[in-house]
Amino acid sequence: MSLIITIVTTANRTRSFHQNDPAQIAAILDSIQRCAQWFRQHSLVIVGDDSTEIIQPASITRIEIEAQQDLAVRLPTSLWPVIHAIPADALTQPGKIDADSAASRVDSYFNGGDTLAGWLESPVSGTASERTARNSRLFEEAVITYTTQRGGIGFINPSAMTRARVGAALPYPPASAWYASEA
Image (tube, rainbow, N blue to C red; front, side):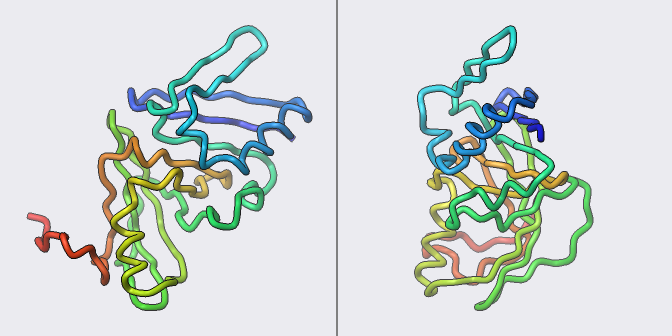
């Protein structure tokens, strides 16, 4: 097995790394259990055969890890991905969010110009006030996970996001929400 790791920064630069050594792959995959801490640590250090990259986690918009196996099973259950990356120009059906489920396009926008289009599909849980709280704390999350277009897993740094656009009206917006349609 091999891994391909892609890191996108707020400078809208993409860096890719690969790993084929089974022991190093195991260590990287074990670190997925601690992915909620990745963007809060002092630095992300990637040591290669002939160089070392030291990356400021606050400058990372997202990280993608791809392998020949389903990596989502390695995530803590609370971080199971409900967003699936799609092409930016993909045509999607209208979104729908009701008391039982949510299905909608979600576009994430980041400092520096990076964007990520996704399709969110998930059962809805919790009371109306819990749902409102989740919606209003999006940027305070430690990490948001998604599946990549090629079947890997991705990790969004919410503190690097400038906005998110959900393709459906939220039925439980925060009390401070402004009501207006796009011009």
